[in-house]
Length: 179
Image (cartoon, rainbow, N blue to C red; front, side):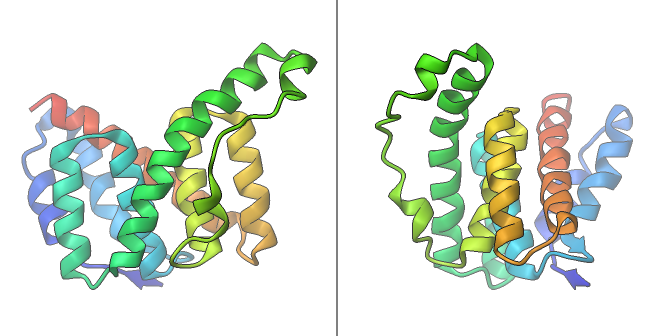
């Protein structure tokens, strides 16, 4: 079981009101996983926060991650995952939802070479990507990244924990809007 220290997140969740009591408890649970290692917890959390674009959440998680020993390479991968998945989830969700064969055969012409060569590990980067795909609701992206994660030797339990962290962070952004 991996456990990271998130004192800034702990302080942040203390400002949640009664209406966000469940989210306060849920946010406390993202710091541990029976399946993800410490780097994966930090990576998924940071990538999700960058994608959610909440400055307070980003600053809080980044402070905790740096204090917890997250590498600059991991932070760069989290940023890259958020940026590229922000683009990809729009494009591939469009193609999937429209469902026309004609769009599926057109070249995407979207540069995304960073995905092939992340600074950390491909498995960790894919976990970041599947978390963001879930946040964006892109079925095609979720399926693609889920398959890639399994090909890199991780399990559905890893995917589940990554998406759980992303979901809690999404709820936390709303909780922050209520204080």
